Image 1: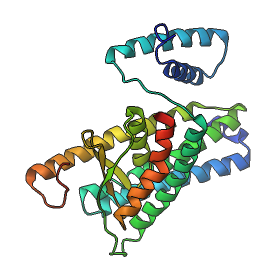
Image 2: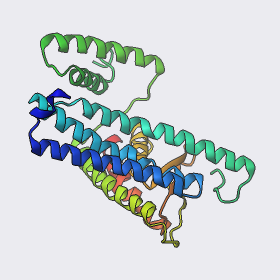
Image 3: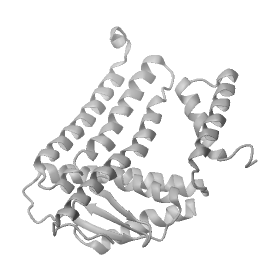
Length: 114
Length: 162
């Protein structure tokens, strides 16, 4: 963190703002996890953190290191792409497991299989 | 071409990933990256991946921008729902959407789009009837959702992948 003094103030402010926005979205998402009633509603909440939330943090990271090293840093683009491709796998796995459980228990509020 | 270099687009993508990881375009990195990408695609062939096509990059770019806008908008909407629990008339529920797209990579892209926009979750795909079951956090009208998914995303995905 010794390089922090070399960072111009506009970049520092913008980085801090983006980080706060990302963190706030992740926090709201976690809050929704507590607040929603059913499993299928709860599964929506953390996607705030995994989409725009992580997006803000990654933009902040790109900005910070690009300004600090005076060259574009692009690792975060890869992280974004990998996030987009892998999140659906976990979400589908969870949703289908819940659906399977509800169907085998005979709950009425889930649709029957097509 | 197809015999020596199957999946040229995938090979090129892997090479791009390697170059970004190394943050360098020196000849050495390119040569090593090319050898690794071609080798990786060879290994992938053991999994027998389905063939696909990718056309109209401009439509794909347009779709990406539309999705980006939708991600921002739906993040805002879901955050509002979480922070204002007072509105009791909100209902969440399942919607079954009949699809026209069959291309496996198009379906994969659609599932990424649907999970990337908060408020909609891809629950179950039925390959026999080609329908997908979604769970929607703020379900007002089923028809509107079916229209939105088909007109906004599926039409463009068919153009790109089929």
